[in-house]
Image 1 (cartoon, rainbow, N blue to C red):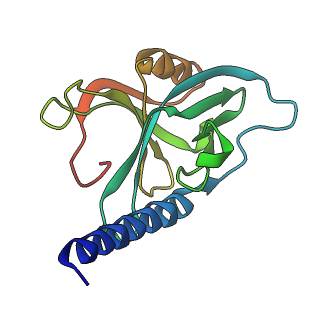
Image 2: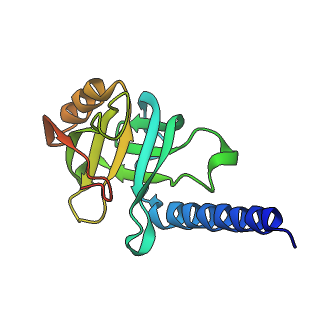
Length: 165
């Protein structure tokens, strides 16, 4: 076999391993809480990106902006892929407002991203890895969460490269 063929096969193997890690991480990060009763009213819908933790200490990964949606109902919220074909790669995360410990303004600094993304880090009262919903409407999302009794921290906190904390 030629060196270029071996190199191409190695690259394909790395891509397959990375895709498997993202799919496994999305399944692990999926939180199947039921935020809305059947009669719950849809209050707001946001579009953005999502950052969640990968398994076994492999760090975090992001779904780019516009691929993820956040739906806020009268009893809770749901975050997930906007299109069903993306569902294997993006976790579905749901919580009732009373389960959320704090919602924080999160910022990814210019050192990591040219545009300095901003969003909302959501931590559950019960613990576990937080998720970050990236959106340009972070202030409006914090306002709506605060109106529903969720503790809100508006002072921006930077994200760490390897974790959501």
